[in-house]
Length: 353
Image (cartoon, rainbow, N blue to C red; front, side, top):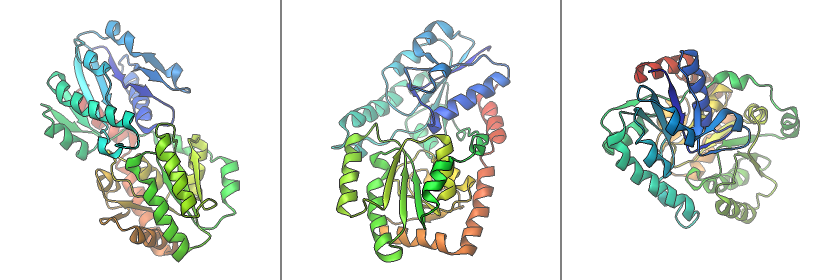
């Protein structure tokens, strides 16, 4: 075997899965393998890091390994699994289509396509890797012959980037600030974050701010509904949708916030949960899908869908100094479980390189 190449339909800057692809590519090269990242679409910012998937058909040789990262349906997968090579699938999970029904029919259709494709291509995959135990169980249930669990490879050095001074200056004058990081998508339940925060402002702290960091380009209808809900709840000046942000701005938001709150109902892993811990930010999260597994006891997990309880938990971790210190220590320890060197060695072992 002389090369290990990777494919995902869309690669984009700042995206956790794309960062994983590029970090793994760099490791593969360091281990002495030729390695490139291929995609159908490369978003602005990573176009020079990515090659067109069409080149795979004349690049990959039988002795090579082709790693297919799967998080959405795409017709190209049906062709790529026919390439004569060792085929490895890395499963980042597919958001169930019912989250998109009536909001984004296009996304729902691609989610259904992805679920069908997974079962269809399973016989052609030599090894299927789930980035969480939750994902691996899905692979087992869908009939993949050989499965493993290897977490996402996170380059923690990226977060040593100096924080954006403009973001720090803007938000340092405010009091308590709650934060959620994640693209605007129905499964992440930004609507419940707004409802929770309406309670928070009415009962706990009338001056608090909610910062929602993440792009909305893929789900504009849902975003429009969120802005209507924001107005209906009289939160126009209390909630900020930042859109996509730079790494320096992201670091600044983590540094400025008092608590990270997630009410997401479906996560295949949950990198922002770990990012928050990296910055000693206490985490309050609804325990759904792979969230509890990712948090690993280093945050406050909510086992009931109770928005008042979520608001009170966010207040508690913000106000109680002893609890904040305890959670910060637990968070730092949890982040070491995802040390890049440790995950790289596990990846190399599972891939048999």
